[in-house]
Amino acid sequence: MSAAWPGRTHDNTAARHDHILAHLRAAALGALADLGFRGLDNDVLAPVIVTGFHASRTHKLASGEKTANRVLAVGRAPVEHGFAHPKNWRILTELRTDPARAIHLLRALLVLTNLGVNR
Image (cartoon, helix red, strand yellow):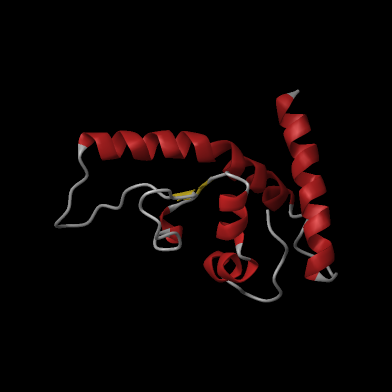
């Protein structure tokens, strides 16, 4: 989770400005993302952001691509559920603070949520 950006900044814009890709490469880490992040990481040989495969009317997915998308979805599900709990509790709807301070609160909430889910 990177630092908060004020206003309605898309995740791709924040990732480019925060140099997240460079930090991930330097730490030899990767990230699982949805199809909205396609095109963010153009390094074909050593991608750090895995996005899955996109189907269209003219390009149907092969069975291996469908399997890869399922594996990606299974890996992303716990993270999506971790963000869903604070949203359902509506904890952050009336948050009146600086976005840079809000990120610390959100990180603490995610830790507490994961502790509660794992019990």
